[in-house]
Image (cartoon, rainbow, N blue to C red; front, side):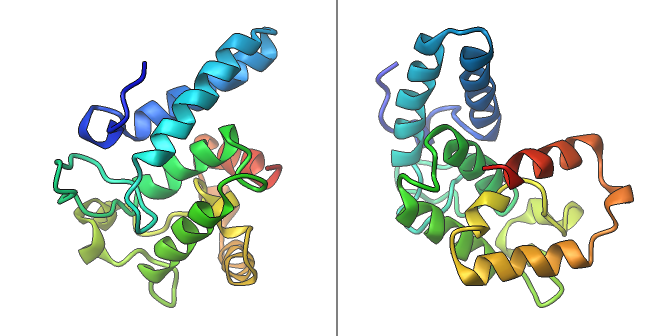
Length: 168
């Protein structure tokens, strides 16, 4: 609690998923203190994001970790959910969605040079959909992506995340 420079700790995409889960456990089990705690953490997590609109993994004090094309939409999507990103911190979430779209090609494949982990996950559709919902360009990205998606090939996790994020 109270750590400000979360990018220098082990706070990463897994932390964001756990934060989102605790937030919803607070709602489901009528524990508003859990949801409030995760909102506070989400604000610090958001403040630790790179000013250019992305989340880093395995970085240092000089911010040399670089953007993560896999984990930026995942982490930002979880923070968006907990902080009601459609109403709050819109500038950051718009920037995060735009940043992500700048590193995909015309087929919406992630450009491998941006993050070596994208080589095995060229398409990223599930996490971070809400980030794209905030601008006309982002909404077109969602429409184009969905129109070319064979949903029968998606994992149960991917389908669940899409269903959830479309409701944000």
